[in-house]
Length: 153
Image (cartoon, rainbow, N blue to C red):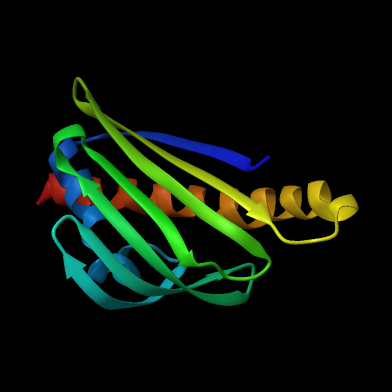
């Protein structure tokens, strides 16, 4: 059984700006504080593979990921192809929806950890609460700020 998260924010702006910010992986280090470095490995059709370096709670991690853009549904999927330990896997989605003058942005994560069965719930909780949820909230606030900045431009 995997661990799941859902982080949501609503921001005044348009869905196109939000979608373009999320899709533009190369600019993530300039927008999302946890993201320190992005190295594009391959861009092919609607998929991009890349190395991502991020810092959470002072811990620097690097992993190899894939992003799949499904423009028709304003959906962006991601998954770690080479997860950072102790993760067995990590994947998720960005869901965007225009709600009047606001954009509703949801980011989901699904992951599991590699550990002794007895410690799995404890380690999963720690990773969810102090790493995934923490970074997701920081990223969503930064995304909202960037959308507002573009709206004012």
